[in-house]
Image (cartoon, rainbow, N blue to C red; front, side, top):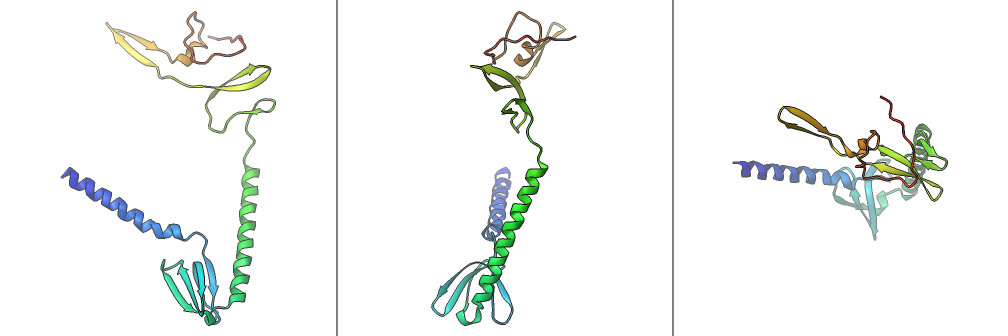
Length: 181
């Protein structure tokens, strides 16, 4: 029974992906404007003699019509204006996105924190500031004979006053760090 359900789910996902396939073909439909004032939304077209073969963006099939029915001047004018308008809209949206995005925080002159987030150590190597990412290890609780011990992550050992150094990250330049209690 489990195998049957698994086969049905895989088959269902396959049908779903095939149903989405035509949507991927419709990237930026253009228009073929006809002489009677109507138009056809198409993704591409080819002229073969006195016939125009086009891929319909609405029906997702190749179709044909006579070349005399297409108003080529109006088609070129409309698609050119629409393309330039689309370019202007995209550029304007990019400018708005750049203006709305704050600059990344500066850790040192010319050195910015990455966008992904995390904990970083500012180190100096050969008089050049560098950021070193500190990775977090998981802590573990151990219970033996009624007592609970906490194995702290190795990143915390560098901040705790102790003689043991378990950190995987070392700095090039020693620095003092105070721990307040």
